[in-house]
Length: 228
Image (cartoon, rainbow, N blue to C red; front, top):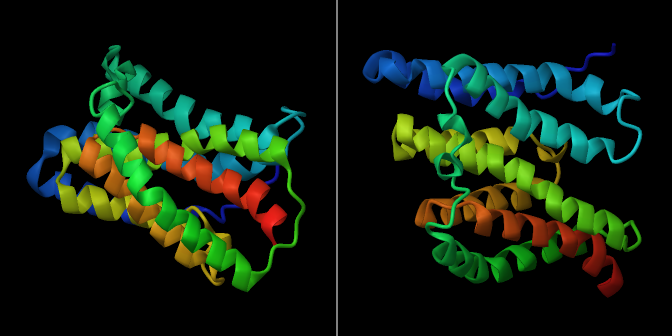
């Protein structure tokens, strides 16, 4: 099995909540430890799963669902030995705050699309419109929102504080996209991380964050190639 640990920088931001809980909130160390373990497993398993022949069709979305959604829920269940981690409200997957989440999605969507359009314009679109890939990418965006806004922000907020949850979520989201760090796309990654966090922060719900993330992907993969 081939290993490429190129995602290891995502572990760096977890130092912040770990130190906080050791000093001020030791009762939350189990949950923070589980999240850290999940991120270590993501770093170790991401590349071998992505390049394996275990999933012949739609490998990328399947790997993302496994590592970003099923893995953390399974470890929470196994280690905590109760069903409380299955409550969607812990991660912002709930009816509560849904209208507010959609409201902020509508407010922030034009900003995100303008930023994405400008970046692609200056960088240059080099692919053809692919509606199937756009649709799959739209739904797959939920996996990142569940992990980075649901677990690393809304859930982490319950265990630490606003500043720690915000910084940890944003920094981890930026570092999970190392291919963007030295290109113009880093601007879009940072802005997307901020606006999706703001939707989650203002509504305590990640559905609007997912809609914005997914619509932005569909815009880039399907609509922009048709416009340029």
